[in-house]
Length: 383
Image 1: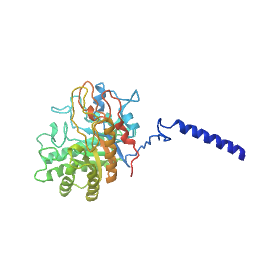
Image 2 (image 1 turned 30 degrees about the vertical axis):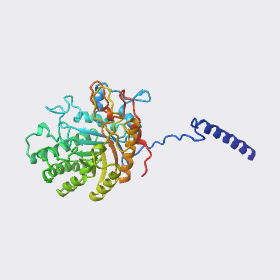
Image 3 (image 1 turned 90 degrees about the vertical axis):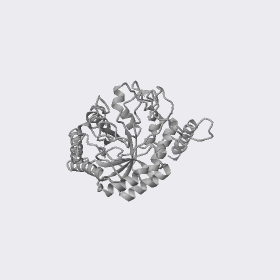
Image 4 (image 1 turned 90 degrees about the horizontal axis):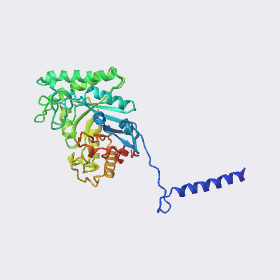
């Protein structure tokens, strides 16, 4: 038995030696290239998210996604790369005059299709109520056409009934979202001018927010999935001011502070971001989540439509490699600060016949081929 063991051991040694030699890098004295460590996180541990609001529209207009030489369903592709949550914007009536889309994209039925695609693959959903028929952001918070001319007291009821109605509709379809945003980038307020913050007076906005929050909490009483509530003012530098104002006005029953983090447009860079997240958590006793971010992989454009001429930021070059490095560094900074994670804004909004010009921030090249940026979602981060 001892002799047989020696033969086996000797054979195993030479087999391993041969395998090691075969795995050496050419020209590298004895080093071995380790396999990439892929970590798939649960969203409750680390949110690795993507806003995929435009995917239905892109695909309906001929958009094609490809990875490793094969066409792929974009939701499946994101899931395979480690995406565990999907953010989706909801417009009240995008087909209304002045609305976002005559075809109803980002309206309720379009969002139903998107949530189903996400949940069929086991991903959580962040439903982003814009409370508008079109984009709501720090520059525009336009009241839906159906609510125009209403007083703050009527708008309060409209927000409540609409919010709980949407959630009940989704629940009936087994599509209840895990997270809900009451408004999108509501730095100046929402449903302007009625819900506008004026001279640091948050009272009108507080009425509307508390109405939306109450709708979510009332819904949760009869739902197995109880959506976490996100308040999302906008950029990092306004967070302390905004949450001081809104909590002093009586809005305290929410779960998550949402931040838009576009580094070239904020005074809060990566290192200070860690301290800001820790401070927000401590001051307001809430979770903190980056709900929007992105980084360009090129400044060139195949169709002449340039979304934005981005400059090199903090040593991260404007390239496919720079895009990946940036998202990895941002995610680690969020973790170091005690944040929940990162949701990338529209990384699948590729260009096609429509020439939307968003392709510069996508995780896909001009032909729809996957770029390395997708890999940031499955990196082995340090906790």
